Image 1 (cartoon, rainbow, N blue to C red):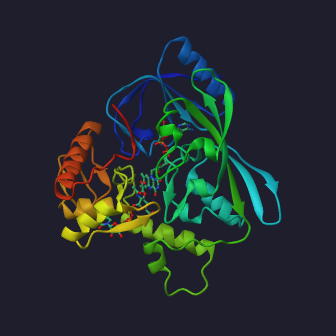
Image 2 (cartoon, rainbow, N blue to C red):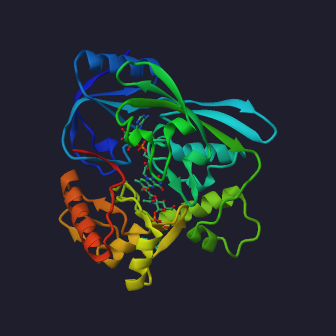
Image 3 (spheres, rainbow, N blue to C red):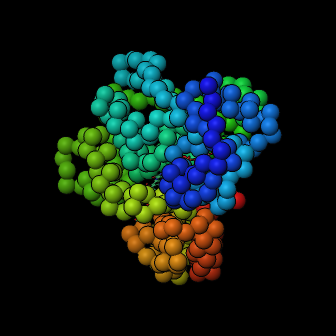
Length: 337
Ligand code: FAD
Ligand code: EPU
């Protein structure tokens, strides 16, 4: 049975702690409940908003229609071979807990993605990534419900069109599907990925590097840089790292030799947006109830402000980066205007 609430505050449902209300709200734990909620919303012509943990959304006003919080649990081992484990994870499972469970079972491959907040079902939306690994490296397929028809579909990695902080769910299929579960392939043999500079340097004096140690080190680096949303509400990186042509990067480097960038395939470079923002003088900046984190300039923090105040600050930051470096910044979290 579906329980609908009217006018529920979403403050506890977004990591920026923005206090807007949902016209209608429900929390679903099964695919059948999800389909019932979709049917109900469509019968009443209510727009549908899907929420996981709310750690990558910027809410700017009360949400019209039905907000559906996805809380489908479950962890199932589908297949075991000598060195592989194929597993299906319910969309409502906490991502970091999943990483911990896989490590405890010695199923390796998610260790670099430790401590990313949010739910497993949101992981494909922006192809979560950290410390040299992205979801797409371990992803097999997902199951999702069509928000128009209520039909269940399966999509594999090619269907999802994963890119850097990108997937088909940000473009053609934006607001079209609710993901119910994801299927991942993990390995029983450690295949360490420690090439990310901060990780490499943290482990440089260590001889016996294990996946558990990689996860611990990633957690320690993250805790040293990123604010805990419970103490300083945030959505992680507020902007993507801009990817530009190597030619443009070279031109910028001529004027600013300390430019931080990583080479990409196809004559492109990814610039560290945190560096660009810090160089423009924003690190630690405060304006009213919003500001820029003092240890990571890519993270905006909210201390009781509104989504619009954050977006105004973000616009000013973008304008100054554009003026100084000629580079456009793109907002990373989903903005609901
Ligand atoms: P939500 O914020 O609830 O939703 C985000 C978007 O996904 C929304 O558009 C929503 O409609 C959609 N969505 C959510 N669940 C579903 C579903 N089941 N079906 C369909 N659509 C859905 N991200 C990284 O990639 N790497 C990082 O290192 C990282 N670090 C972070 C650090 C901090 C401190 C914070 C606060 C955030 C960080 N993030 C990072 C961003 C965030 O953790 C991820 O984007 C995460 O996947 C969001 O999960 P969520 O459940 O909170 O999604
Ligand atoms: N830097 C600065 N000043 C800053 C921040 C960063 O100069 O204030 C420079 C430093 O040179 C640093 C480099 O930027 O070495 C990279 O910084 P960091 O390792 O912190 O990573 P990032 O590029 O800022 C990205 C992701 C994070 C992810 C980390 C680790 C994006 C938009 N962000 O941040 O993801 O955790 O790498 O892989 O790609 C998120 O998406 O929410 C997120 C936190």
